[in-house]
Image (cartoon, rainbow over all chains, first blue to last red; front, side, top):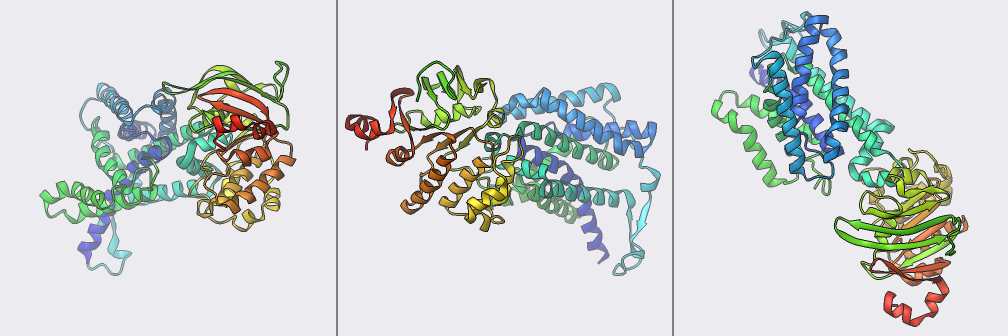
Amino acid sequence: MNHIFLQILTGLQISALYMLIALGLTLIFGTLGVVNFAHGALFMLGAYFAVEISSQFGFGVAIIAVPILLFIIGIIMERGLIRFFYERPHTDQILVTFGLAIVLGEVMKTIYGANNLPFDIPKWGSGIVRLHEYLPFLEGFVAYPKWRLILIVVSFSTVISLFTLLQFTKFGLIVRAGMRDSQMLAFLGVNITRRFTIVFGIGSVIAAIAGLFGGPITQVEPEVGMHMLIPSFLVVVIGGMGSLPGAVLASLILGMSISFTAEYAALQQIIIYLIAVIILLVRPRGLMGKKGLME
Amino acid sequence: MSDTNGNSFFSVKDVHAYYGESYIVQGISFDLNEGEIVALLGRNGAGKTTTLKTIARALDPKLKQGEIYLAGQNLHDMKTHEAAQAGVQLVPEDRRIIPGLTVEENLIIAQVAPNIGWEIDRIYEHFPKLAERRKQEATSMSGGEQQMLAVARALARDVKLLLLDEPYEGLAPVIVHEIESILQEVKKLGITTIIVEQNAVAALKLADSALILDTGKIVFKGTAKEVLDNKELREEYLAI
């Protein structure tokens, strides 16, 4: 019982980080139709800014400042570069965003070096939680790192906030409509481009949240964005390109499969790719990909 | 239809539009008076839909040359959403009802940008069928009901120029009659309208005047009656 519970918890924690990055990725893809390979770099920037700001002013300041910074950077990135590639083929978009990711990685390498930057967990988030004290079905002593539990909570709260924004606000209605037929929205007088720019900013904010709370768990080094991007991209594809519920579901499947194959190291290395192959063979559009959406 | 170069309500001057390298609209000019309804006719591929999309200032086709004026505003310098805010409303082919949204949400979406037309309650008064289905996913309705919603969605905006692209396409004859009577009602509102339709007879029933397009050029301008009375014209360009 204890063993399975801990594996589920670990699965959730692995999912949590992939979910955050995949959510931003699929949100941007679903609205703007851009495969943003620089999304991992936004996560990396988020982690670096978090380290820098929290060491100077404390983590509390970083929680506010890093998302704001990334929102601004996201808007600049979309307006300054990515919007020129909307009408271009996906391969061009991948090349330019991939290039941008390399540039941003190199900039961080020049400033901070190639090594991992230590990211100190704030005091209120460090240590362990004695889970057996709260959950009577656990036997004996079961503890879990507090920060990882916080990551799970933050991640799912972010998911819920994003869904609330998209499902229950007028802004969300416009964005959802724009995801399905942006031209028709323009025919109805809606400046959908402006909304999509804000969406890009929101995607960047989610990357900032991932950097803030995921940074202490992954590592803070120039390559970390790319390392996180590949499995997150897999999550997006398995979930169905542009589908937010799909991304959530797929990240849970991948997180759990990584966690439950922990005893078989060789299998763990390939499990997510194996699952991707099987799912895409059965459902070529991914788990929740919709016909006609982003094809 | 006035061919003067004076101040018509709506005026298209030497418009050329391209889809990529394809030269589709090859220099068309025409004017409309306020409240006039014109049928834009011609064979498949003559450039009718392209003309409407050019007027609605779609990103594609590209307007490479020419001027378009609506009530003193120059549409040719505008982006799609700006043209819509200026009063152009395209009811596109296939209706383009937004999937995943309810009937009501499809109407709300039409009232996000400034210059709103009919209030939603007024739309429901005129289209009780839509009121019944307000909470239903719009794309689950029948083709006729979706066409009704597409027209209603245009009326939800302050429409100065209505562009109807094949409003009867793919509808059963009974439903065509229903949409026809809706469009007759719309006609009473005095909205300047361009109607593109394969079913030329149905379009001419509604229209005051007609334009016939052939390979991107206007080959005939006249009244609706002149087209119906001219057998040669009908056979050559309309196959009716």
